[in-house]
Image (cartoon, rainbow, N blue to C red):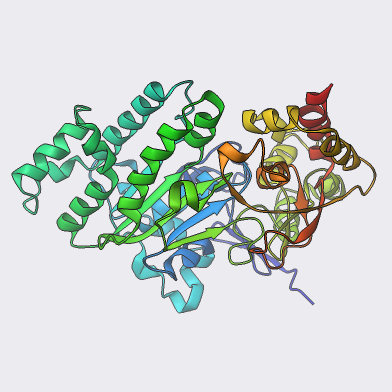
Length: 439
């Protein structure tokens, strides 16, 4: 029988294997906060720190985690950066990270063997969240500005004795936003090489929402340009790069190897079908129980299960974390919280152009216990989504509108799997965002 004895000590609430950190002791919930240090110092954090162990166990690997929006991807990436990054002068993260992690599972895991990695690596971090522009010139401009900012964050390299004048001059051009297209194309690889020379340590690369510019490119007609840039930019840095310790990318859709990752033989893809990190995104039943108990809100558990549970990630049943936090924060008032975030133009186009047979299946999903049997191929080639039979089901699955209880053999793309709507919240959304597109 599972241990249900709860303890609270040094800001850590523990029930069985579940840990909640609340160093401030205020029981406040981090709605929309993805800065890990801010969450740890001010809010309740449901411990997902063993993701760090998942990543560190595979040195030299580029890890791609695909999960629906608002499932904790950005917060987890910031947690990785906070744990791994060697202090950068002038950065808010320069403070010692160890006090934030000493009560979390990663600190005790495998007799503490991961502690030596805390604060040990130079880190390169990018987010493509803002690269959702109507044309590639605007999008490329945002990319260059983000590169300038990340280079500027490592501006101490301009004074490094380990770098020669040519390297410093090229570095300075990118900081100033005056570099050539060739400089920008190789900028990720170049920065990792400079950081390794200065620190004499391999580099961690973290990239958030890598698929956002691809989705925008498909929607607004510059798909080829953005894929060509990303393919060269990523491949140069993530393949056969002796300066790379490990890389982590996150996104919603898994862009196929053929378009971006064709040359990356060290890419490890983890979607909702995979088991390896199934508990690291989304809240498990025991985590929701512990959080509700800690906040004295257990009366809302049954309604929360109906509205926000129902996803199957690998071997684990999970709740939508954004919706659970919003529900508890609104004194257990059930509502469609997830739908009040961003939309998805690519899915809207696919649904609008679907044929009558697909329409019938979409309606069938709204029936009580409604399911459809369809294969899931999580590799998406965007130019093919309008003509590739069955692509809509894989995209709805990756986006979080559908789930399946059959997650075995994730690489079998022709295996028929029973797809269903996860919960009441998604059923409400499904009627409004999916079905209403037809009428």
